[in-house]
Length: 67
Image 1 (cartoon, helix red, strand yellow):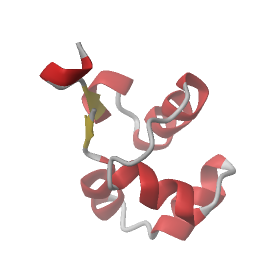
Image 2 (image 1 turned 180 degrees about the vertical axis):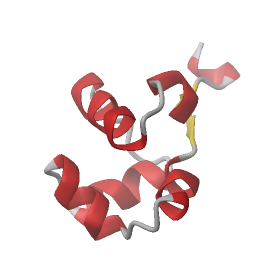
Image 3 (image 1 turned 60 degrees about the vertical axis):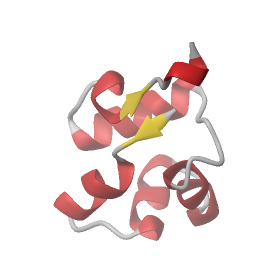
């Protein structure tokens, strides 16, 4: 699954630690999501969408291998 988390963070001038604090996870979790090593839970994806004011589908997209 691809994501635009790093871009969205840059637009809002947030560090990984800032974003982690906003949604209640560790900075390492944000790093793992950005590097596509970790797929967030539905709750975490919804929290991220709220922070950025975008739908989950605008932040996360399925790849062919995910289907």
